[in-house]
Image (cartoon, rainbow, N blue to C red; front, side, top):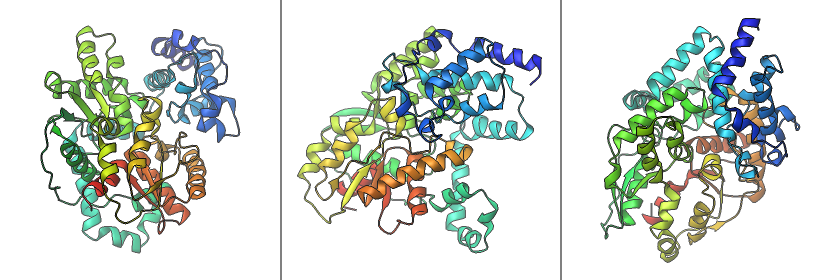
Length: 438
């Protein structure tokens, strides 16, 4: 790197990376056993949270020269934020890694290909729900028209990287156009549903199931128009200004005074929605709106529990046994939102299955947004370890609460050759089948 670019990189870290937050780290090492990349890199300190913070500080202070190895360390971070609940000093690592990626993005020259990909993703696909729907419609056409069968038969998919081929094999089936017959009960809460981008397109059936369960439990549910992607992918990729754009759109789409809760069914989205107020800390007007928005955020499993789903499920008669059921945490749902027990308690209340705890369920599965596409080698190492734990407990069903985690677990099941005995489901879809006897 030239001297000019080196100086620009250092200045970018000074501008974007908060020195006070860097100084919060005491280098105690409590984060180390919680970090998947540290564990799966043979305990390489530069692949740990405290190691990365040390690198951030060193770059900011001009103590080391920027090079590819430093960038690789930041790129390999999953952003799972498992280090945060493990940290006794309350280090805001999630904010630091996002600021770091913003600093790098503002300085490092981008190739023409990267510019096109970023513009297509962050200015179009994840900034306009109509374009997202159009893209998913193409995938649906590919599945339903016979093109998928032809592509697989002639070996066309061999032209793609192995992990992309695996992801193609576990694409969810096209949504079935059905609506549950829900008997209205006394309204317990007015709920606005955050539909999400992928959840409202590729996983639209899960969204419909979510609404059906909420209505059955006594909610008046509205789905505000004009919603966009939550902005998490933007923020995690250094595009913080574009994540603010999406956040402002979403805040203005909800009538915050007329609802009790804003509910979501994707752990990653929920964590980012719950931190909208941090995005606008320097804007007094938007900050107040964002604080009200975040104060009404709730994860679907938490709301289910508040609405009495445990008692409801315990009273349902057992039907056909589904064997052992386990649960893989959504990293952001557990580490950021703090939701750990609610999904487990819901599963324990189901009469025709036995819940078994998945060892190391708190560790990331390797999905991490689009990490499994950008860093397939590390993602595969992490997934391999995760699947060993799944096989240890002999679970017939693996439950998740995030679309990326769900696809990742499906890939792992296919890769291990246990698809005939093991399935992966979103918590909502699993519970919907019990409540509506599907």
